[in-house]
Image (tube, rainbow, N blue to C red; front, top):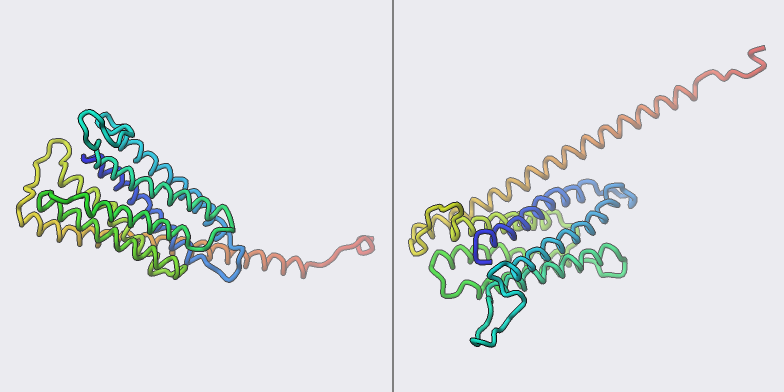
Length: 278
């Protein structure tokens, strides 16, 4: 949707997933042990299925919202009288949501079955991001200078995400790649919010001059600030997860030591039988 809410909704999608990944990936890597039956590792698989279901839900809501808003196309692509295409911008947004819906469905199938090849979920996410970037590339033609520039910044985050996802298909469980994917998801989410505030100021705010070169310079600098914020959030969440797991390990170790001392005391306790009592 070409309005403020139309940028906030997908922005929330990427921010929520970025925040979740900033917890999931550190949890997955730091808790990894030589033992295959790690409690956390078993739960990660179930969480991946839930993640896919949430992705399907968000994508479906976005798709239906784009189609059935009061001025939406309502599933009409071409109008007979007069002859013209119906709300192609909404249709482009719906197409983007469709591929993220497919990505969520692939997540569910991949982690619900052992028959699917490893990395298929990342491959499909990369395809969804590629479609998003491909459509956005021709989504902003013949628009004012600032409008085109602020969307071109978004394309940087999108296609960097595409490259990262495709690398993750072949390079499994790489911490640097996973954390970079987290940063890009957060960057894309916050930048969609930024686009909404710039192009469609809410609550009657003052409009930006879309042909002022100074605004273009500021937006470029602002993009770097968004990237720094994404890195900061990722680093903070990684540190929190690390501290949490270290405390859990310490508590578990203390419990095991306590149990060991108790067993040792019981082993050295004098045995009392019936003959002794007599």
